[in-house]
Amino acid sequence: LAETAGGLPFQNFVDVFTDTAFWNAMLNNCILILSVPISIVLSVVCAELLSKELPGTRVYKVILFIPYVCSVAATTLMWQWVFDANYGVINQIFHTEMDMLDADHLLWTVVIMNVWSSTGYRILLFTAAITNVNASLKESARLDGANFFQVFLHITVPAITPTIFYVLVMGTIGSLQEFTRIQLISPNGKDGLCLTGVFYVYREGFMYANTGIACAASIVITAIILLITRLHFYLSKKWVSYDAD
Image (cartoon, rainbow, N blue to C red; front, side):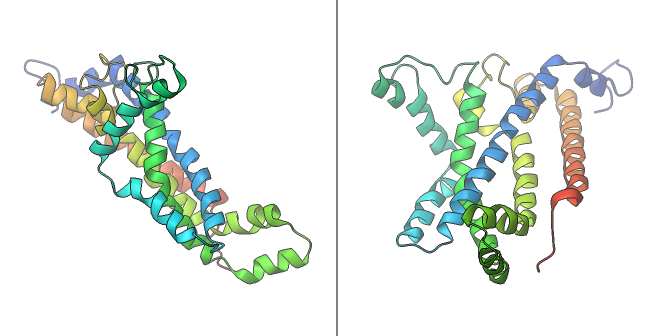
């Protein structure tokens, strides 16, 4: 791990830090992280609507949760069928020839997949959090003349910030570990253009047999995840409220 045959101490780490492919892979992970805030916004809005217990809300909850329990491989193949340039459903419907699975669009397509697959689970988390918001606070705000949106923004959202924080941290970690969807669609990562951090480790360790570099890269990725998570906890002091009252 520390050195290659005949190399300097910690040469593998030097190779990782000086490899532009590794940093491009981590940059791709940053693009995938965008799915987290998008999913959070959609989940919070849907959870607020579903918490009203209107007719059919339980059915909607089940439908929205189904993508989360489905196999990643199966749903990825389904989306590949939807977006394929030659026989994709979208191109067939709109009579276009757009290739959403090429190197320029693949990461954004994976963002769509991740939002679709994770939103249902997060809706359940936020629905539970919204249900536990102190009802007297909402009633007091309404008596003071606050409308639905004001109550939602100034009462509900601050009260569920611990849940938002949890989803944000776990979602970020998951995005930094993204591998399966891209590898299924393109086993070589679109000639390396769409690698992620974990995909880089897989390529070096299992495709190129550079196990030392793969181990070094995995340690660097772990350190990056720890630093980002620690940053989340530090910043959470400024916006997360644990005051239940």
